[in-house]
Figure (tube, rainbow, N blue to C red):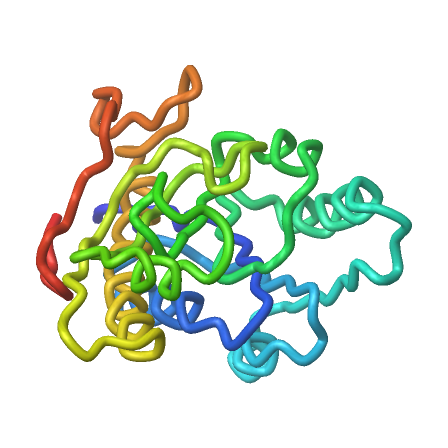
Amino acid sequence: MTAPTPLLRVVVLVSGRGSNLRAIAARAAAGELAVRIEAVVSDRADAGALEWARARGIPTSVLSPRNFPDREAYGRALGDIVESHAPQLVVLAGFMRILSDEFVLRFSGRMLNIHPSLLPRYAGLHTHRRALGAGDREHGASVHFVTPELDGGPVVLQARVPIVAGDDEASLAARVLREEHVIYPRCIGWFAAGRLAFRDGAAWLDGKRLDAPVVCGCETKEGA
């Protein structure tokens, strides 16, 4: 009898409703993603993702930065909470705090983020507005390893979304979000399977250094 595949222990950091958290959990529940969400941690007590996680028996924690004198102190306390769950991977899913360098380095090589733009374009906030304002013809989302540089870690996978006539921030954001729900679980699955790693400051997939991200050019198209 074949032994079951061990599940990758994951801690998810959120600030809002947690739609990417839900997408990851749905794939795991369907047996399509070999992960176990050990905990959901938020900087906001009113984050919708917390209520969702509690209803499913997933441990949750709230740590407000208002209770700390600076980012470094907050990062140390946040790191202790995350580490207490012994994660093999930390997943940022709409966590809207800039993390301290100490926190990032503590989980170096085992922390992923998803950003709603085709990095390196539009690091930071208001990505959809900026893409529309620039007259771009396409936009998208990027999954990347987290490094101390804001949204600057090596990008693993991108999904491209065309910008069409009549798009506004809301319509564009909705289409990009659908792609996030595809590519984020996919990257996490690669990591869980040992296919994806962070080494020598770069992302490696199937033993090969990624000098450019893998690109999914079709909206909501499934693949490897």
